Length: 472
Image 1 (tube, one colour):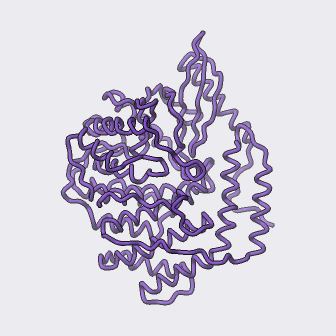
Image 2: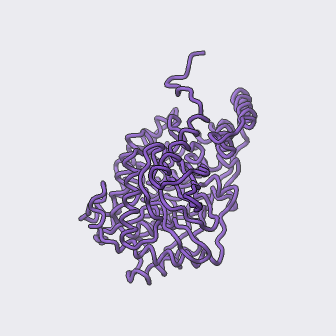
């Protein structure tokens, strides 16, 4: 058997993890005058550490935030610089101590906070997020803080790459999604659903929205103690744009991260900002936020990138894409079909045997500081998904090919040819075909979710949670 093409170079992972801790220790000594006590790597799809150090008789803790698997050093510095500007303008973000070269990271205050969800779908499926009374009070306070974030003058960010003023309604509406679409094209992660999203977004720009503001980009992420908001977090996709993009984020994150009563949050924001919330515009930006998030999820799946979370990418792609289509359906008044059923699974002896072997052996792998138990679980989830996919692949492709054929009026031998024809239909931008396209692509995403879960649509499973309506 020949060696795999571009097989990664073998490395000692324990030694690699030790070198990261050594780099953190050196930085703490040189920049904080402290002695490292512990660097605990946290469960996340990017490298992060809770670092405890001693300085004389004082024990202190910092947070080391590493780079996303799909990002470059400039992206990490971008987030750091954004947080520094926000801190200078009175926004409660953790204090930044500086940038670290090895490992690539920036260092901030550790914020002791109530336990919260990790913000990943695979954890939400196993441990659904719960909204407590205190967290709800903190959510309302966060809306006050978000209104203040939006009031920080755009000129304050003029020295940060990518945060330039925007002038036209088209730029304000599309800058985030056009950028992510280009990333998707460059990384070969654009499919017919993403083509449709971008075409639809271009055709439905809210031309009356001409006020550009600084936006968090992935709003709704903050740390709390009881009902107190102690820190706003995660500005890695901050931008200049429409404030209603940030409001759309709450719909996108909920209920994987329980955001509570979304309309009530919008009412609180309107009170805090003094500006009425335009709900159809929020619905429009929900589509954009879902497009961006789903393309980002696909980039998580790059097998050549250390730390990329492949299975989280699959889960998010299926769920987020479907919910983006539900946002369009709400705007267009469409009722979608959820009455789908898995057929009897097809028996694939070779694939089944091989994948079950992988599941057994992965479960036996030893864990260490460089390969923790949660990483082993994520690795094992890949052959589990593929096992389901082999059982239902023929059904998935047959139904999709049939529905595309009905839409375009042709017969196709394989899914690749059908998708090529569907891309041409989408490129035409015929609004009269939007309803048929939404229904077709929604069923496709829903079927993929069914394959992942191994069940018919189930409202109790977060993978099938529908997008909460806001236009009723």
